[in-house]
Every structure is written in C-alpha cells, then in structure tokens.
Amino acid sequence: MLRVEDTPNYTTAAFSPSLLAEMADMVSRYPEGKQKSALLPILHAVQAEQGWLSAEAMDRVAEYLRIESIEVYEVATFYTMYFLRPQGKYMLEVCRTGPCCLVGAEKIMDQIEQTLGVKEGEITPDGLFSWRGVECLAACGFGPVLQIGPEYTFYEKLTPESVNQLISDLKVKANN
Amino acid sequence: MGRKLLLEHINVPGINTYDVYRSKGGYEAVEKALKTLTPEDVVEEVKKSGLRGRGGAGFPTGMKWSFLAKPEGVPRYLVCNADESEPGTFKDRYLMTYIPHLLIEGMIIGSYALGANTSYIYVRGEMMPQIRILEKAIAEARNAGFLGKNILGTGYDLEIYVQPGGGAYICGEETALIESLEGKRGNPRIKPPFPAIAGLYGCPTVVNNVESIAATVPIIRDGGDEYAKLGIGRSTGTKLISAGGNVAKPGVYEIDLGLPVEEFLYSDEYCGGIANGKRLKAVVAGGSSVPILPANLFFKLANGEPRLMSYESLSEGGFATGTMMGSGGFIAFDEDQCIVRNTWNFARFYHHESCGQCSPCREGTGWMEKVLHRLEHGQGKLSDMDLLVDVSKKIEGNTICPLGDAAAWPVASAIRHFRDEFEWHVTNPSAAVSGNFGLAHYADPLVPVVA
Image (tube, rainbow over all chains, first blue to last red):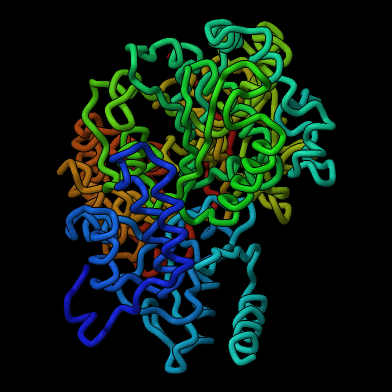
C-alpha cells in the first residue's frame, strides 16, 4: 500500500535529460491523445533511474502525461513490479510458484534469508540488498530462478552455493 | 521424429540476427503475403490451416481474424500477447529470446491480414532482456525495409512497438491486456463488446499469443493445407510444449500434435523420463490452471487407448478423468512431491493474481489459500475438502474473466483425484508438516469396474 509517511523528506530530483528523452520517445509510440498508454513504460524508466517510485515522482509523471495523480497511483499500486518505497541496491526476486518449488525454490529463499540476515522485504544495513518471493517468472524449466532489476538479469538453476556466490559477487561489484 | 516448423533453425548460431534469419528463408513468407496475396487470402490460409490459439483457449485463429470489424476510417490493431505468466509455461520467452524475428515476421503477416498499421507486442515487464531483443529485431527489420512506410514497395505501412507490462498475471487475459496497454489497471472488461468490435482505444482489435503469431509464418510459407496435414483431427500442426517440474530434461519441445503422452514424457527425444530415476506421481499437462491428473489416469483413456498430446485427447473424459491442453505448460510431479503443498502454492498464486474486481474470485481465492494452508500445516479438518470444493464451485463461472475458473479447477481436481492424501494430512497432523504421503497408489494400474 502507498503511504504518505514513506516519503516524508524525500525531494525528487528533476528527471534527468536522458530520462525525459526516453519518456518523450515512449509517448510517441501511441496515437495522438492516447499518451496515457506510456504510463507503464515510463514508470519502469523512472524506477530504473531513481530506484523506486516516490509520490513526488508519480505526481511529476502525472503532470507530464497530463493525467490525474490518482491515475498514476492506482496503476503503481496494482502492478507488482513497482516499488513504492526504497529497496536495496540489488533486489533479489525469487520465483516462489509451484514448478520452481518442485525443484527447490524454498531452499533458495531460506539460504538468501540466512546469508543476508534480513527477512523478506527488508533491506540489509549496508543498503545493498533486499529480497522477496515473486510469482511465476515463466522460466519453469530452468528453476529455481531469480531476477535482479532494473535490467532484470536472470539467474537460473540456482543452488544454495550458487546463490551465495552471486551475493558475494554483487558485494564485490558494488564496492568497485 | 516430428517436423520442426518454429524451432527448425533454433540452434543455428546467430539466428537471433536479421542476416542469419534471412539467410535461412526468413521474411520470405512476408514477401509472399504482401506481394502475391490479398489480406483476405492470408486470413483464408490461416483458416485452412486449422491453427488454434496457442495461449490456452484454443480458439481457431483464422476465425478470430475473420470476426474483426472493419468500419471505414477507424484504425484496427493487432496486439501480441507476450505476457506469458501461466505457471509451467515458458515457451514464449524461449521463442522471443532465441528467434525473435519469427515473431516479428508473424506480426507483419498478421497486421497485413487485418489491415493494421500500428501493432503492439505486450511483453510482461519481467522480460526486460526479451524486450531489448525484440526492439533490436524490429530495428533490423525496419533497416531491411520490412517495417515503416511503403513496405517492399507495396504501399503497405506498418509500425510495431514493444510495450512492457508491470507484473500481473491477469494481463494475459486479452481485455485486461488492452486495459493495461491503455495505461490502466489490468481489470478485465465485460464482454460483449468483444475486442474484435471494440478493443484498444475502442477500435477493432485482435489479440493473439506469441506462438500463434509465429505459426502464421510456416502457414503462409507452405500454405494452410500443408500445415493442416500435420497433427491429428482438429488439433492441426505443431505445438511448443514447456516441460518442467521433475522431468529429466526440462526445456521447450516442438511436437506434432497427436504424439502419445507416454512417448513425450519417456522418450529421450523429449523429456527423457523422470529425473533421478524416480517414479511419476501426477501431471499438470497444460499450465497450472488445468486439472491435475494422477499418473494412472494420464497415460490411458477410459477405452484403454493411449492418451495423445492433442486438444481433444487431453480433455477426453471431461473433468472426471481428463484435463486440458491449455498453454502447453507440462509439469511432472515425482513420487516425493506433496499434492496438498502444491495445491496450496497454486491457490496462493491465484489469490495473489486476482485483480479484485469480482467478489467470488477476490474473496474465494483468499479462502481457498487459507484453508489449504491450514491443511498443509496439519491444522485442517475433514470437512475442509468439501468446503474447498464448495468455494471452488462458487467461483467457477461466476466471474467476468476466466481467472476464476483457472483458480477453481486446480483445487477441485486435486481433491477429486487425491482426496486420500488430503485426508491423511488431517488425520496425521504431525506427519503432514514433516513427512510425505508419497506415491501411494496413484501410479497403480486402474482396475476396470465390472457392473
């Protein structure tokens, strides 16, 4: 749920010129007057740049698309990919649906929780990681799988060892 | 070995690029369609092919195309449904990743047939890498003159855009997808009007699955009659099956419809049997929404004949002893899997994915999840099974879109076929958490009932 108190002292930096250019390109894909169609791709682009969707950022998107703020909020709260509060730099999203569970997804989530030392939805103290279970990622033949935004890089056939390796690789990457 | 129509060149290095795809006969079907066939001819070929929608519903694609309204001065749209989210299904991701031009070529053929000048591919947002792949393929096709203004000098104009979703299973339902493409919540619309009359922006619209659109390429290249020679009965052509769960060789396989299910599961050409030498307990043959079947009902029909991978044979016996082809998401369960746990998992999925518009689905999926959770965790009652069936009946058929049915069927079928495993969870509460009911009798040969 979207809560105003999640964004108390947050001031949205103006969108970067490259983000604004991307937004203009997205709007150009739809017929005249149907610019609202660009809402979902624009929210993805804003989240990729800012890490999450603050109320201010959503208001700015509404202004840009000449729609009401509520039209942006209702979309951002409906779809699962939009973060309504800050996340770790790397958000590990593990598929938790049936076929992945048949091949060990629950063990992977247990391992991540143990290695990171935080529960589902929480952020590690260094701000680097958060994790959550998500529904079917359409990679059932290659499970267990996880993805990391904003590029949504995919990691397949995970084992507790490979997921630990991934976490330590990401730590190294973040510190360089 | 079946003929490969979609995956024939999947292992050719560089087939994801325009040049290699073209060198393997790519875009010849577009040339044939635009230069030698009228849009009506293209629709006619697809009708003749007998192609049925590969997204799950199995509705004949050519017929769907012929229903499109064509009022003067109103744009028409082709929208590709690439919101692949049905648990067990991953064929569209595979196709878009490895041979994206096949989809682009099919989009051009379909758009031409329908008279659409702007078409959209709605890809689920989690597939960002596939979105980049498709955007690159579109740019390559445009450079080669297959997109843009006056394609191949025929006077036909077409632009294709890729649209990311936001993460919602419901957007695989065509009217929810259209709402989402308009920048709204994915709440399905009440039909009628059908999208063929009033779809995207209120204009006539056709929504087709990735695989259906890709299949129009071999249909136009070889002719609808050739395509219809493959397969069996009203299940013509080839179908991509996503094999997962406990099969030895998970992956995407292209089969001739009509292949015996036993051959598909056990031959080395396909699944290669069950992983780690275990025994098969149950199968979900067409994605999580279709009824689950125990092994002993899966291989043979009531008349003793082998069950085939076809729309008709998989549904033979109705819901009493049959299932459905669905989207071709084939999930095998080995002897160690717990049906109650899996049913709870699927129920949680549908509860999570219900859009909340219709109360039977919004409330019913939540109750099914809660009751299944307590059963799985040893806190259930013997009356819970009847309660679950009752809830599922109150959802089924009482919602705007088929998500309600899709949520009801897995629960109802699991109780229909595995009731003793559910009862065991109630009568052995401590074992329900730590132990396993196991294979039990679900793979035993059926004893014929003598009247």
